[in-house]
Length: 222
Image (cartoon, rainbow, N blue to C red; front, side, top):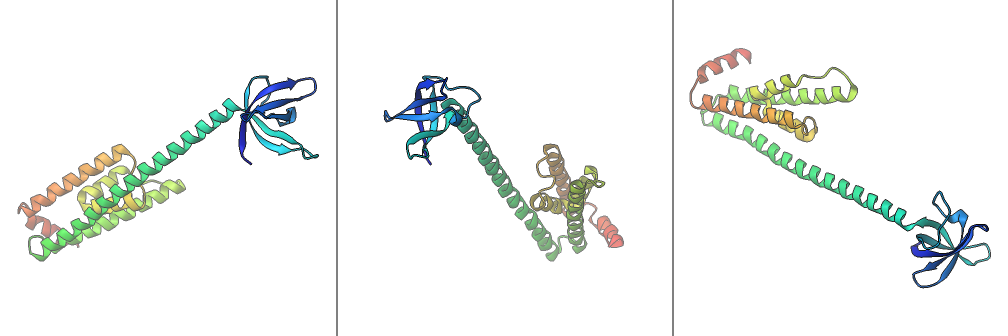
């Protein structure tokens, strides 16, 4: 039933009942048992109530509450709703940005394949990146499972080393789709530094610096 607003115009404390004047000017009976506050009603105070009927079918006010109390509760509820909506909006924006970065990360593999296909990069380097990406993703998944179960965690240093060595795409995918290590600012700053370090190393290889040596090392490892 719809709530109505009115003002307590008459109250007989010794008998435990009174009358509420509605906004339309009607006088509605109410009993103290229907007053929801931990005190007695006061003449002149504004209230909110539901219109009901007694056993004889006569109109009476039920669920009578203080107007300022109802307004306060509604304000708190609206504030909570706004906070939830803002949080969902921020989360949605964050996830959208993460997915775009993930697409760029996967595109990076495509660039590596193109470079290898044009003999500008060794296929062993492509294999190294693919393997490190998979290993890094698995390590993130293992660390998240450990965090949820209370088991031994993978040190953040280990995750960053894997990222710097070439597993940064796997780390980015794990942060996006596993939602692990994606909110901690300090971790993300260090993560992006590992990407910079790795990309600098790749550019060094493409420029011819130490490419043969690295290829020989990868050949021995793989």
